[in-house]
Length: 381
Ligand SMILES: Nc1ncnc2c1ncn2[C@@H]1O[C@H](COP(=O)(O)OP(=O)(O)OP(=O)(O)O)[C@@H](O)[C@H]1O
Image 1 (cartoon, rainbow, N blue to C red):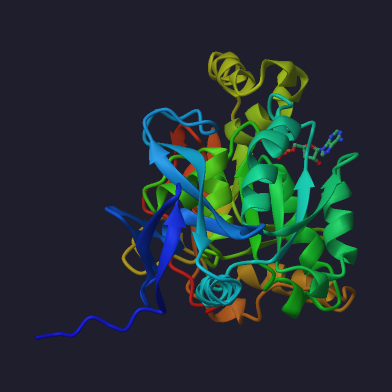
Image 2: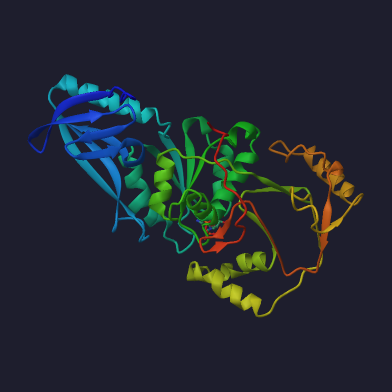
């Protein structure tokens, strides 16, 4: 028969004036009376208050404080217990900290808040959800509100990364893309792009937050996103390189040409509508569809080789263009690929819309590419 592993600490403590046995097991279960907490999942942190220890946790209830999602809302809860002596208090603190430290959670985060994104509620999301949960988790945060378009990119391109364990964007997808571009334009991009980036949905579309949370069965709500960040859960993502003349951009969410791009860009003037601006403008554009002439050249993924028609020498022109761009920059210059020798295929227009996706969800309600996978990270582990 398997023997239960030794507890990290087993003690008698005072809870609500009554002496009770309490245990922290090697698997991170904190047990007392008929109750228990899973430290990895439910405990954010702890604090010493006089002779007591306050455990700060988050539990699922049917009506929580901060999620706005009816499925298992999350509620902050704390409870106190009093070890029998100062020595015992010190040992409890050591053991709890030791277990929490073993979970690889972030300790210092740089938080970007876009007060302009979505329905302009990112600052409220930060104050009501992000800040309290991160304080409960004893995470040291440095906050920067974005002041203008491109500000998040500027910050990411110059930030002293060694001071932080991650960058958190309380925003829509636009700020995430700016941060990725800022990190990749640095001369130390190779190291910088390893910086974990967290996303708390507070924008119009929130396609990335939805894709990440949905991949682990969580609702796309600010509190669930903050919890994933606090727990240090990570995924690696592909980056697409876009060359346009001598300019280079990087994309992690999607690339759009035609209808979807028009809706995204031209609906800016209806930003006051919040998320509804996209639906409203989509209907307007669909009622008077435009057509775009052009051709898409692509290298098919395994299993998709029959799509489009074969192309041979035309791709070589694009190669020499991108090589001349390579010589000028000092940040990331795109993947080292021998693109001349790949099996290119082509689909010719006119097109109504081209939409390329890295992750399944383009927005919270739009699963545009169900087969795009958000894979478990091996990058940081
Ligand atoms: N203070 C500011 N004033 C004006 N624009 C800003 C400010 N801060 C950031 N921006 C810009 O706001 C844009 C939208 O940001 P964000 O992604 O947070 O919200 P969003 O509403 O989801 O937008 P989208 O869905 O278009 O990405 C970004 O392109 C960013 O550059």
